[in-house]
Length: 350
Image 1 (cartoon, rainbow, N blue to C red):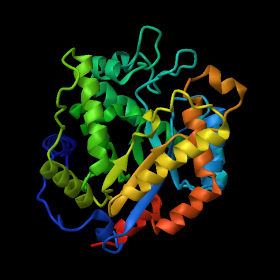
Image 2: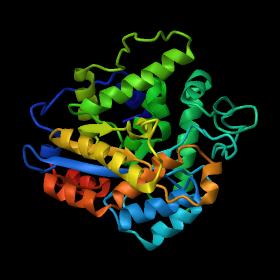
Image 3: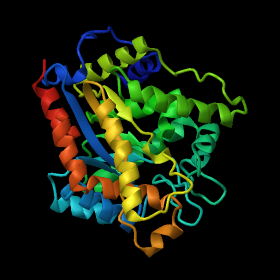
Image 4: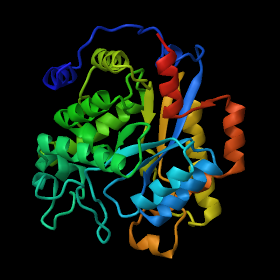
């Protein structure tokens, strides 16, 4: 299929709907009612601390998958580790933002190739709003393809592609290039197309960023979703028809869980607070394949100089490596999986 035709298909989200009475988990060979979960760690490669937290969350903890930020300075360190741990499920965390004040990164393609994706200093825009307000979709296409090419040149073949800060999901023309990249390269795409219970909350959040960037947001207003349930199902059929596995839902709100103002920020308190939150997400996950996103970091003293999110990221690390949480997952009867496994199942499915 020619690229122009493919993008047109993605743009209108069209293909005939099939199998709407089944979850994608069932179509991948799981049983009806199974809750299949990917515990996914974002931001590998972002820093030394992020790498260490991700490694231990997967090797010693409950996490099953991760993804790497190719523009970041510690990506080579993580990729070298992946070469020695080829069983690890690692994807490409396509990055259009550089969000910290004192620790920045620029586009892989270079500012001269993608000037609208950069701020005055040549780094990627700090916020989602700035990226979607200024970014040219053709330059998004150039940059995300450059990130995939760089990964492959370094000997890293990603098990899937996903999106840093969800910026690619905030504009339809950005999203089109994201989906096309996965389909053309036969790489699974993080794009829930099932019941989307959690994912709809995420899409509303991205819609809010877009309206704010355009100066059109008013507090309390209804945020329209970028696609209907029918269009989402059609996108699922498009991806499935391309031979790719499809997930049913995605939870991406854990980064914004506020700690109680009067809570003492000890490791014990951080662990218990975030563990209870994650238990709630798992308990409320509906049948199907659900991707739950987190950011596991084992911080050194320097990490607080990168970001104020140190307690969020350390909390995720503490939860994923906590034996009580791992036992909870067993008691809940959820099935943990990876994108690698989903791809194997898709190849075996009809």
